[in-house]
Image (cartoon, rainbow over all chains, first blue to last red):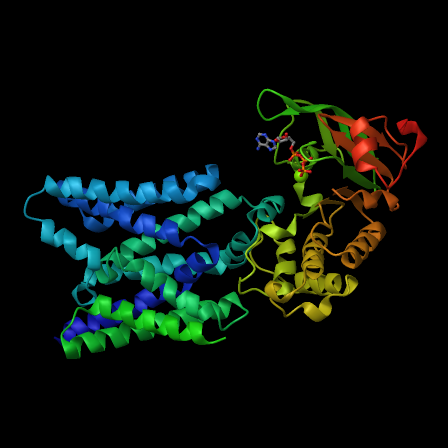
Amino acid sequence: MWDLINNSVYASILLSVAIAIIGSLIVINKTTAITGSIAHGSFGGIGIAMFLGSGIILTTSVFTIVLAIILAFITIKFPHRQDSLIGVIWAVGMSIGIIFLSLTPGYQSDALSYLFGNILLVGNQDLIFMGSIDILILISIIFLYHRFLAMSYDREFLNIRGINANMLYTYFLILTSLTIVMSVRAIGIILILALFTIPGLIAERFTKKFFSMMIISGMLGLIFMISGIILSFYYNISPTPTIVIIAGIALILSLLKK
Amino acid sequence: MTAVEIKNLYFKYDKEWILEDINFSLKDKEFMAIIGPNGGGKTTLLKILLGFLTPNKGEIKLYGKTPKENRKIIGYVPQHTNFSLDLPITVFDIVLQGRLKKGKFFYNQKDKQKAKETLEYLKIDNLQNKKIKDLSGGQRQKVLIARSLVSEPKILMMDEPTSAIDPTGQKEILDLIENFEVTRIVVSHDIKILLRDVDKIAYIHKKAVIHEGPKLNIPKDRHFCEVELIDFLKDESCGI
Ligand SMILES: Nc1ncnc2c1ncn2[C@@H]1O[C@H](COP(=O)(O)OP(=O)(O)OP(=O)(O)O)[C@@H](O)[C@H]1O
Ligand SMILES: [Mg+2]
């Protein structure tokens, strides 16, 4: 029992780093729909992994990175049709997953657990992967903080300054896709979007600095996860939806603040 | 010293020429206004000057190099309307972005000093801790001008710097631009720019520079005379 709680607390801490940085960047870059598309599309990777019997983390990472690159290309090339195209990737990715699952009898329930996730089921191997992605995210933000901020504001200007904005944007989507892979086990495909955007949306209302936005959203993410885990434990309910509902209530409360 | 040199430049997006046989040159620290009707090709020409589009024929040089090679000497002020305003970023940090460049990841003391000086020069240092959302249109435009000047460009390019700004704000911004000691190319819809101390005017309409030269010398172009100049700068040479 205590083992489970320990791992879920470690997972919460590791996830809150990603929520702080990638979550805030998703909010300011308005890439929520793209993130949703990669997250749902990642189900294709899970389906393929089950079919091939290959490692879920590796297969899904490769699959979602490909999705990220396709989405970067689409949104840069067809900016005016991006919303529809993002929706297409969303559905096609999921369909690939479902097809491969139907070809792999016996694993359906296993795969379905990735849809909603369970933070109590995070294993040691998952924690190691989460930690490595966190390190990659931290190194990236240290070097790219000013570029990412400028990118969210005005990509054309970055190009004028001799910085390739499209490359930077593609790299950001790749980081997003790795963040999704590190979160599916704990949070689940369907709920990732909420947990990665709500803390940023709340934090943004309370600060003028992106740096503080990241710190605040990371702390909020951690508070939501820990309180969700505790509540789910006492009332014997599913933890991840509990976390999302707590976050949703907090968002509504924050919107009441003028 | 020649700042800009354009020779026999042609450009098309698809089949039709948008810019046809454009020729002009600009000396260091000169001020050029690019005017013309909608769809005339002003923005296209600016994008070529910025190195975002490559001409199909002809030559373009900024201080002896192609725009792409020489981007670091360009300061650029885009039209201000298309950014998200609710970003958690202060005016000071936006201006600092002008100091970013290839291979540079962190700001140093000199960058901050430069940003401070530029804000003071444009008399907007009192705004430095505000969010862009809390500024007026004219103030926002000045912030973007500050961001373009902070890299100490040799050549400043602006796309419609006074659109969506009230007359007082327009005057203030044009006053500033008039006094900048760098080469300036300003695209404008607003023909009032011709009342300013410009060294050259490029009138771009339907694929060609109709007019290029120091000071106003009204081109014999029906559109220019009949539509653009009505009630404004009538001249006999228009023949209307
Ligand atoms: N990306 C594009 N692809 C194809 N045609 C284009 C593209 N951008 C502009 N054009 C065409 O090129 C011509 C010149 O457009 P441009 O935007 O340069 O005009 P402009 O002088 O800046 O007009 P405005 O005053 O309305 O800003 C127009 O006929 C336009 O339809
Ligand atoms: Mg234009």
